[in-house]
Amino acid sequence: MKIKYFGHSCFLIDDELLIDPFISGNPKCPFEPNEIKCKIICVTHDHPDHLGDAFEIAKNNDATIVAIHEIAQEALKRGIKAEGMNIGGEISSGGWKIKMVLALHSSNLGHPAGFVLDKNGKRIYHAGDTGLFGDMRIIGEEGLDLALLPIGDRYTMGTKDAVKATELLNPNMVIPMHYGTFPVINPSPEEFKKVFESKFKEKIVKVMKIGEEIEF
Image 1 (cartoon, rainbow, N blue to C red):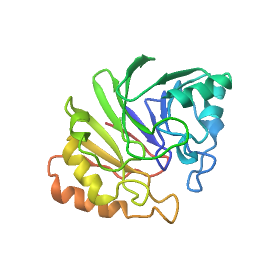
Image 2: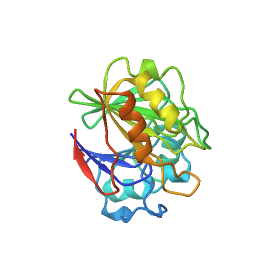
Image 3: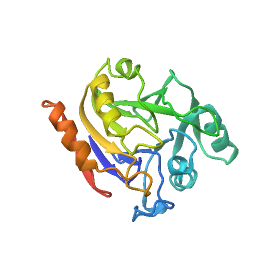
Image 4: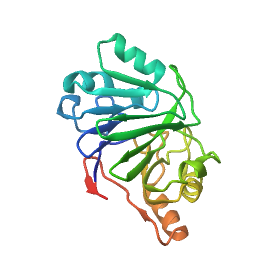
């Protein structure tokens, strides 16, 4: 399975599922919305640095927005295909099983969320914007190949809590996100990597560069 990083909290998985496409407003992202091809766009919440260019990219690609009910309804009003859901629910779309899980944050439309994404037995958790919460242990109980975790602090978990989240989730691999985009969320991902590797000897942490694509 391939994953490409577009900065902040935006990832493209297997050239088809895009998450939180904050592209045109991201000062660190060198890409344009019209360069991105996808079939599904998962949106964790409607803050501009997560909803971002989702509607434009969906229109360009005839893609389906998957999001909390209220965001999905907004997409439908704009003539965009959408699958609305809510926390605890699961849908199937384009060969993916997509489960919406809790995130501790704020939003304007509906509740913020995270996603567990399952394709061909590979399971990925995108935490969205969230603080640490104990039920992360439940999210990880069925096994996770990869967890995408915010480390930016101030608006989300910082390094210490992201390391604790890894302990609860027990994924095989972690990629940090939601850092370095703005001065107020500027922790060192290398420091996170250092703390992570001192605690977890059997797990992989990967600090991705914007535009980088890896297989896992």
